[in-house]
Amino acid sequence: MGYRMLIADDEKMIIQLIRQLGHWEELGIEIIDECYDGEDALESILTKRPDFVLSDIQMPVYDGIQLIEKVREHNLDVLFILLSGYRYFEYARSAIQLNVVDYLLKPVDEEQLNEILEKVCRAVDEKRRQNADQESLLNYRAADENSRRKEFWDIILNTDKKEGRKFLTRDRILERFQIDFHEECFQVVYVDTNLAGILGTDHSVFNDKVKDYMEGAFKNVAQLVCYVGYIGHILILNYDESRRNEVQNAVAVLFYKIRDLNEIYGEFRLNIGCSIIKDGMEKLPEAFEEAFSAEWGHLVFFGNKVLKYEQVSGLTPFSLSDIINEEELSALAEGVRYLRLEELERIFSEINRRTVRYQNAGTRDMLQTFMTVRTAVLGAIPEVKRGKAAEHYYMAYQNARNFQNVFQNIYEMLRKYIQEEQKQLNEKLCKPIEEAIHYMRKNYGNCVSLEDVAEAANVSAPYLSKIFKEKMEIGFNDYLTKIRLEESQQLLTGTNLSVKEIAFMVGYSDEKYYSKLFKKIVGIKPTDYRRLYG
Image (cartoon, rainbow, N blue to C red):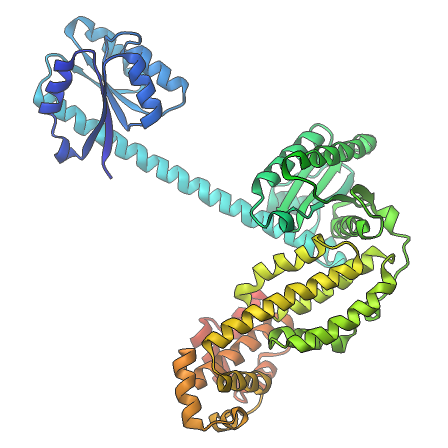
């Protein structure tokens, strides 16, 4: 990487001499500007950001020392070489404390000039190395911080409430996540809008603004830990009992501040759900579910508002089977996995008919039904597309008017997903390959031969082998192995079955052969895979 240099001197002849004497190409230095007074030099430095400046100590407007001081006021880390006559030698030398690399005496000597230029280039290299090291350290710390916060929120959002008790202790949270909860009251607040669906674009500016509002609303009132994602903003508030009323007022202030952003973004839905106040951090997973359930209350108590869990806890409960039974859940997952739109139409037609009776029912049960269906749906979507699908799935809720409309939107989301997948599949696969893959995915646990699959696809075995390799860019046996190992990975992380049982279930009677094959393809043993991802 080269070096960018600016020359500042009120004598044009001096600048011309410096240009003639410097070994610019050899040193890799580019002169990006010439300035004839301190004011122009300052403007150019602020605009063009050179690596270093060679400046005369005596210039109009700002002299060399004043120029350095002005640059420092703008927090720019620019190196300086001062050019001085003998008359100002002591003055120039005193400037070393201002981080001047060196000073150059007039008349300018070629050898001295290039020695100093080499010296400043080495100083720039050292500064760049230090900055790179500092940036690497900051990136490492940021990545570590993000990893720790993700782990923290995974515990809060995904841990079973009973299991969460052993993780959520003050000492563990402080040691592992450097979050020092110390007051007696804990409350979760959930802020959600439908802006993602309205804008259809990144709304990080909105999120940053909301985060600023949150920090301002709860400053000096409660300790705030905040999560921001496509599901909205989740706040953990930790405060003293005496601050209870102040916290509730702060939630109201936050609501009105966010609502006023409709002047910028247009009308959007805004609801805030508040959990019951808890007396211990081990109850945070429960508080999160309460805050979510409270926010879901907007499907019953229409309009933009702050909703408390107490307002929805008395609504009529219902069970998952009132909306969708286990057989239908399994069929739904199969429909998504194998892109069967007609199967989805049948299931969602039933769901639509049933949900109309539960429009004003318990929002906690609505939420649990929504999340159960989510697990089935996302589990059937390939992992590489699961993240985007999860966002679209949640937008189906954010854009819904009522409980019935939630599932109407989910169906629309899945219909578009399946149609897009079918389009891509049709572009890549011919009909016999579709039939072959369908047969393999249904029968991978059995002894599957090329002849069996070809018969199911109604083509000859040699023909299927040929077009499979051409279209899929992978051999028949390798693809079957891929299916079996993918299914075994799901079983390793989602069940307590032994490796031997899993090997048998995915079509391998020899556990040792399966383990050896798994390590060869995946890179680690099945037992290690379970330990890492289970």
